[in-house]
Length: 292
Figure 1 (tube, one colour):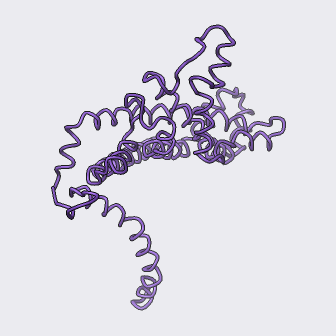
Figure 2 (cartoon, rainbow, N blue to C red):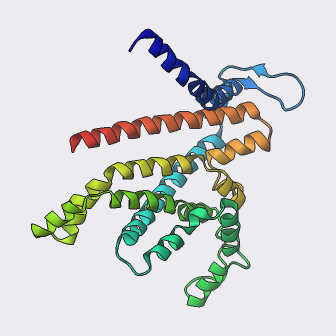
Figure 3 (cartoon, one colour):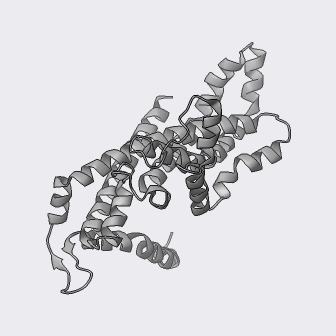
């Protein structure tokens, strides 16, 4: 490649690279800058405070509590959504009756706007008029009124269930694509050798789904870690901070208490945790693929 050809190639790529850099990195750098300042909403200009915002976060009980809630919420949501999505993908990959209609219905939660879905579930889980409490009371084994969103012991599980219901179609679609990408010749050869259905599943299906499963786990984790609208609409972080994740705490800090510097510091801390998790997960999956 000549020098003029290289200059032409860089010139063609440069506009797109600059645009991506501005769109991707400017918000991150601006957030890092805000985390180093005390930014009053009204009054004097921002004052540089260094790492004080981060030091204050470490000393705050609500930040440590939100971190624990975030880990529990993310783990529970990802495992549940992946498990349901995996089973749904296996079902949709089989020769079931009216498979196109079943695919449409089972993937419907993905198409429903998040706000609409949350409002419907908030009504279904209502302490006084919720249909779930009514159906459970008909069995005679449950109390007539259960405060799914009012009890600190139940609210997080209720939010996790709704999140998993909203996210499982993503896992189902990606795993279904992975299932259909496995060569059928492998299954036919296994049947000729007398393999059982369980052996086909263990030695062909599971290894074939390993790469796509890693991607699904990573996406579900990132989506759950940063989710704020669903949780805030359902519980606003309550009751008694039982569902206050780091994302919700960031929203409250910035838009309820107007502590923009502190909110930016929480956002930067979340970004750091996300990057560490992504790098760890990438190295783990690369090592697993190298071992096979």
